[in-house]
Length: 390
Image (cartoon, rainbow, N blue to C red; front, side, top):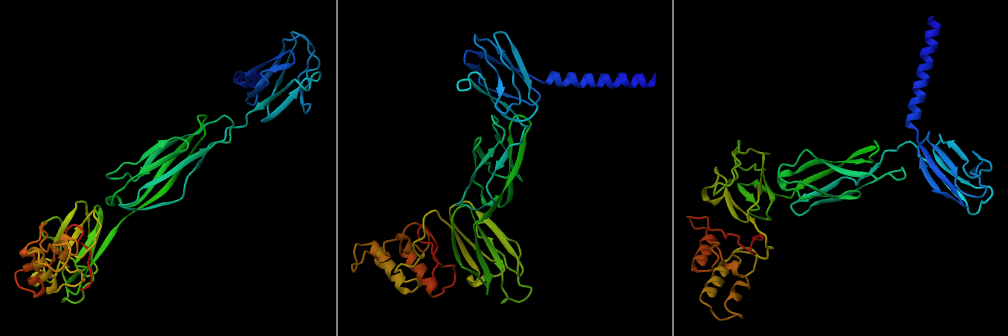
């Protein structure tokens, strides 16, 4: 009894499997008409059956070019079928009309996942550079189309959002800012719609354009630093001149930033987004104007040193005299009056007011002779923002 039950159970399993395979298989019909197969090319999956039905007048055959199958002569109403279990391309013909009657059965292979094609590591420095690269995908299966999705950046940027346009190929564009400096992975997914997928990532390194100011010998070096909007300034404490412990700060005169107390080897950084001149000082060494500086954030190119009226790259009484000559339109150069300032009004604008007056000449004299009550240094403005050695 046990053996009988086992045999019955096995038979049922075989029937179920056979029924499942039969349910999954497909019959594809090809009509044999006068001197042609219609359609002449069919695509099937492994396990599918192709059925040829003679609907013509004359005798025909369906014969594999490699003799895998041969229907023999067929007349109107005859049917021949063949099951295809192996992937590949199977050309065939009619033995009676081999020149005009040809066809092909294409049997799909197993689905192959698409393959993402991505670039190597992307390195950008901001502001000034943007991220832009193309992604594509290939698919080995005939007829399959791989669609690409951008899954985002990891980690997520704090301020800006990348965009992905197109599909396959597609382009990722991103304009990060200094506050987002760091490493990111841009992740992509390719999907062929038939269960095949591929994921991959592109490493994106974002660096911030950084200017460095040293705290050394009780001074900020350089004293004036010109940068562009969105760029970063880092102050580095390297001073060994003052007594230990040696404390410095980078403190904005208007309260825009404050480093708090810094000791040797400390670094403080700040990103400047607004255009303008930003004077600052060290709170512990601001006496006698020893530790003062200015950050100039400009969108125009720097062409000259502020206060250097005679374009000599040094500050002397000749600069004050040139300013006086400009104010009173003294003869001696052409064209008057800007020739006294070498063609740039900002060269004589010591106090950064936007105009040149006797007050600028007085400020120049006070600076040159280190008069008390300062600071008397020339304030960068407009195109006058270069720092030259005195």
